[in-house]
Length: 425
Image 1: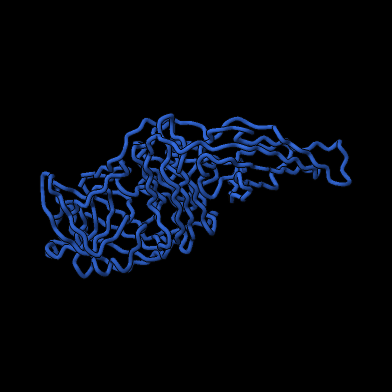
Image 2: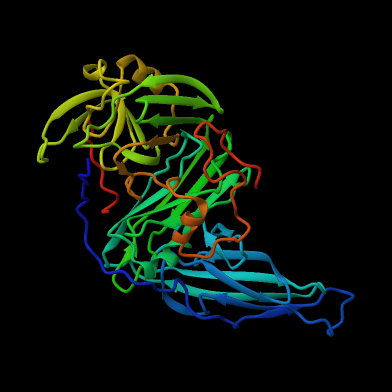
């Protein structure tokens, strides 16, 4: 179950490189509103990329540093005078185009800042993007797609091949954006090997939340030898709260919805030679029918299974196992999966969503971080240690760090890519 697939991609060496270059003071204009004398200071504005900069990455954004006022207007146009839509960063440090810029094109940004006195300053910068890069790309995969209904524990997951080293993670993380409606801010956390970064809030998502994600990495310089591969975006919503608690001591699965027990289901888990992992994991994907193929392992077999729900990259699933129904509730006989009856598996498929929390306890081994969507397998304080950027100090869980698995989700506060094996059993 620890078999991990490898994507065949170019290997690259990665080191951090700034997105944009030094400040600009060219083209600054001041305006005075009627009734205000020159004694009132006008705001100061610096922009990046600097005026007349060439070979700018297509991932560039307009950086703004304002003293004595705030940005009140931004206009970004291409060399044909056409507007380029852009969105402000939450911290006001810049404006990010809605899509990557084109190669070998010239752009002009015009930014106006207004001071408390009412005086304004307008600053311009014109820059030219680089030709299409011949450097190898770092492949990224966003495990969050549009028009889906996810469970309340669904993290936003981005995976990388080759992995991102520590010195490059801050630059990459700054290009990962998540918006929630209603607001429920969270944080990113990197797995130690750099293959995967996950985003979650301190509490589980509230049902009905709309989540919009953008992984804006196309053309991003990642060290001297590589660039980001693509710009991914998706918007989906969070459904009703469902969670599953599996106890090896009792060989029982408890299924909760909105904090209420729906049903208990007998299970058979991994035998001692191939134990099931204990920990907090998330349903990653669901199959009406799939094939488990472990040829090449120490215990080779090929078997078709129905109603399978993936829990780990290594190949642990909850699935229908009519062949072990006599053992379910009594003995562990699987190769690491959680076996349930055909009827229970069919029922469960109609209850769960990708993103529902599954907690397994009492087995011989613990879940490895990064083996699946493991954002909830550690507490919040431990999770945010994996962020490459500062996390607001006030961002904290609103309930116990270790709630009962049936607790209602949500709070009141606002690889290769990972290896993927269908080696369950």
